[in-house]
Length: 288
Image (tube, rainbow, N blue to C red; front, side, top):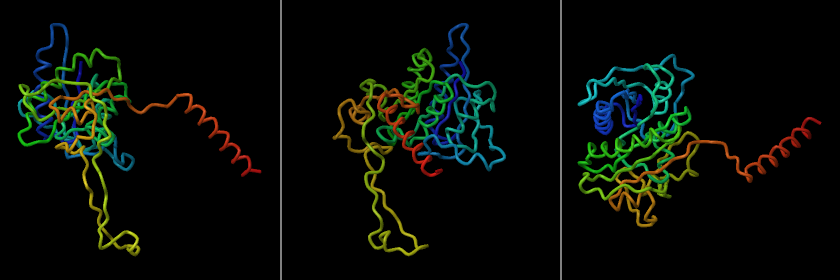
């Protein structure tokens, strides 16, 4: 079992260091006859909010990388590369750093990824990308409070690995952990993806509204943040089993994610048929 570790905070992120060290211990404790290895391929800069973006790969001659050492896990191969998390996953899966991995573990992100931030998170984007390549994966995030016990969070993450390995291929889990030591963690619950958002409101400068600007003039937009922020805001409007509410209540939240796939529901089939007829009719009228 070869595990790829990546993140979106960057190769020097303390959450990644805590996770790699714990995974190193997990690998060292493999049962007799079972091989476990860890490879770290993570961005060389912060790519928070990158989702599954790979950037402009068409105008690049190559991707720069640097061999790196992870504190507490110096024996594990680690590379910081000039790429977003999704691209880190792709190049590792395509053989740039040796045999392709069997599993992707991404994190620990400093800040929870709940609600709509699931769509925007680079941490989760790496796992979704792995799923598109046939791999199962685990995204791990922790509430970004001062003194957040990342080592304890890493233990929670590693505890689920055996179940993830035994699950069907392309199983993707999103684990969010409150900033609590293990002794104070109330447990782990299945979390539903809530409607919590990162951006609650966007407001243009009052003195320079967009419609008043001439071409070439600039303005500024202020963002009012919602509850799905790294620290986690007010979740009082969520249901008790929503991911954000679980974190607030002192539970870790575990969610099974579904990657991008074709919609084959009957309603979608009916829509496609109508759309095809409409397009074909337009083309026939245009040609004639």
